[in-house]
Image 1 (cartoon, rainbow, N blue to C red):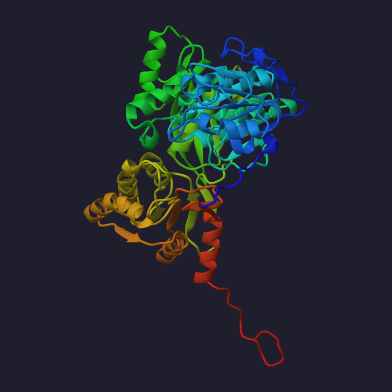
Image 2 (cartoon, one colour):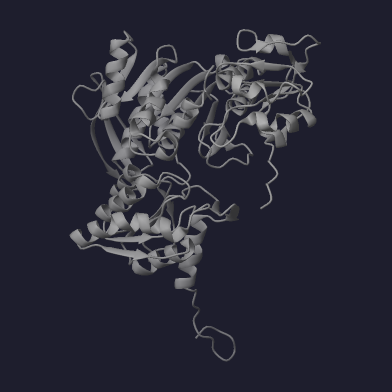
Length: 526
């Protein structure tokens, strides 16, 4: 297998970066023992294959190997210095460049990146959103609401990077929160382009790996908590504690928390115990600061009534389902927590649409109602299917080389909510696709048998999407889950072009080819 050449995202680096002397860059962050002249650092990186001249190469401990193994390659490519920990020191002593040692090199790297790029988050109003589900949608609702309040808005998250609603070119498609070096650089790019407010997703990985160290959030939001990413965190408790870091004292000025969620209530109690008065709760509960008093489906969207500490506010969003109502209430509460105009924000939110999040796919007047959604947890699957009318067909799979313990619960959630479940492939990566499907089927079949629902196994994914359309009649709802906005499918070590919406359109055309009236002998219509 050949190692793919890394793609350098030029959009992730601001113009005119002023080199910073190494000792100033790492002052108070790492120990530096070097007798010779110190270089001025132009960039910071962790990938020896993408090293540039004048870079500080961060040799970090990894899951499979220590980055110090690759420091020699980085230096040969132009790295001017190395940042590592005690474990990596011995492998980097003879490279002929300064080596700095930090107890927590990831945190040191993040703070150094903030210094190198001019501490960009201090120039921006920062909104951070974490939670198992709803992060992307909430940031897009924040974007629309903040824009309506007169701000130029940047968005950072799973879908990519946006300024004023325009996507910035990037090879990244599913990394929720970039590495700290890329994140700080992107914030600097946004500041250079006139952005004054940023809505960003903050993943549990990012919090655990110190990617957001050095960012002071004006408002942090917590959407909900469910089972996910146990391939990395190993336990639900560790997963929760990673997310809880966003609400530690000093990280955010105000916390906006889903008070209906059990984990959210734990965060509220912790904040109170720490003496923090700046906590706003959101939910259906009678004691919520921002209470969802009522909502109803409104066309393809939702009409919402909020009781905002005694003030009733009515507005509409173009997104269906109770979970999107919660996302909208969260976004509005976060905007108001920053001292902005909630009425203007609410009017702006009706403009919000989110790629791959309950994205409708119009197949014509006689077709079923078809949606594409990124839902890949049991909680997200249940929420997505709960947002569409019956009868329903769910197309669901699970990712390979990821948390295997959630596969059966994903199948169970789909089988409870949909009359027909088509189990197929997602991104199998290096796992056997049939084995992955078996995990989902193990959860789906017992529930389907109990409820009288139907389970079908179909692969590859394009065949499954076509099978779902074949089984659906007019008035049915078909929801393709798992891939959402993605435009590739990862099979083995290969990314092949694949877009659920395009595949669904092609499948419908195959099932319902265009027909034309017969012609008369002279070529006129009969």
